[in-house]
Image 1 (cartoon, rainbow, N blue to C red):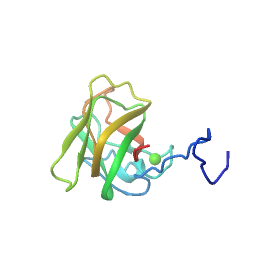
Image 2 (image 1 turned 90 degrees about the vertical axis):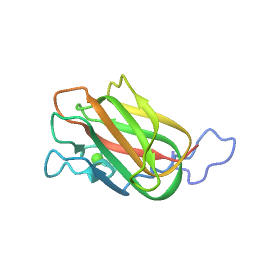
Image 3 (image 1 turned 135 degrees about the vertical axis):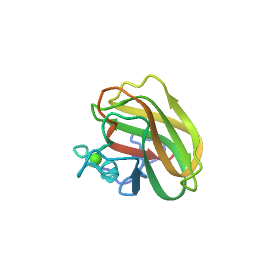
Image 4 (image 1 turned 60 degrees about the vertical axis):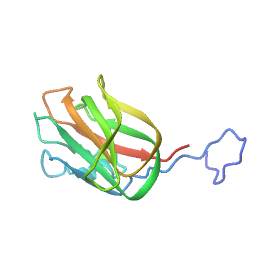
Amino acid sequence: MSGNWWKPGSAEQPSLPNLALNAAAAASSIEGISFEAERAIDGNLQSRWASSEGSDPQWIYVDLGTVKALGSVRLHWEEAYAVKFKIQVSNDGSNWTDVYSETNGSGGVQDIPLNNVSARYVKMYGTERGTPYGYSLYEFEVYPPN
Ligand SMILES: [Ca+2]
């Protein structure tokens, strides 16, 4: 489908913009060169952020630049996924509020709905790894409300 305009009532819905795409990002650690935090917000499902191996906790956050209304987060996990993690948000990059807590994650593509959340910073805070490796995300996507 290539229509440029969405008409109310039509079956075709506009796709929401990924607010994290090419924003800024930071992480607790990287496994090495070419596994930087920015690799998780570059829109490329081949490149990825990976934390240093074998330690908890590890985190990555996205800086959206300004406070924005948020509707959901989509995580594209590499094989090095998180079993337990939280999604946290902040408006100043230092005081964080939990908005989601996962206790039995299984990796893959994980959609996380957020309700009535507005924030500038969005963080994945991993506390338990699913493998002996680190934490690794192909993409960390943030979407506005529908
Ligand atoms: Ca990527």
